[in-house]
Length: 191
Image 1 (spheres, one colour):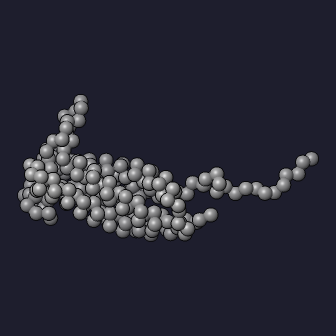
Image 2 (cartoon, one colour; image 1 turned 135 degrees about the vertical axis):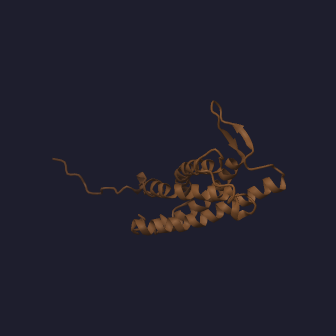
Image 3 (tube, one colour; image 1 turned 60 degrees about the vertical axis):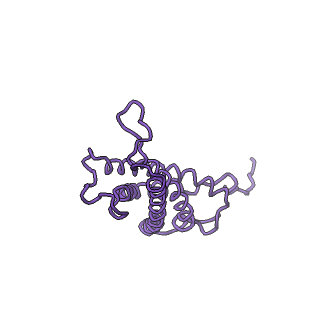
């Protein structure tokens, strides 16, 4: 039976943060490409364009929500494979089937992180929010002054510690299969 990493929690979190950092780069590059293609090339007016209203509320799903969801999915697959291999790895490599069964919980945890990130992004993008990023600094005149990129980054940073803990104790926890169970081969003596 394969044994799990015996790294202290702070080292595992450090590895998780490094993988997350690379995932952040993947997410940001994907977001930049999507934003560039849709807004600049396809001529959409703004990332704030309303896609559809949320029924029974005064809220809307906007184009940037779609952008962060797509970039999240790309980065999520990237992060899963790196975390599986380095952060929460076992000495023996798992079969592909094991990776597939572990990805679904990782995706569920990631979707929770996406919800937190979407909430933070919305608060920082909405001009009526007290957390709105100031227009004089974040005027979207360049990539470094783009409000969407900074809001998305803040959302990712805020959701990271929670997703680490859930992934550590739920997604990548070894759950023995019936075939992994140790059989007691000792004969039973009858009276």
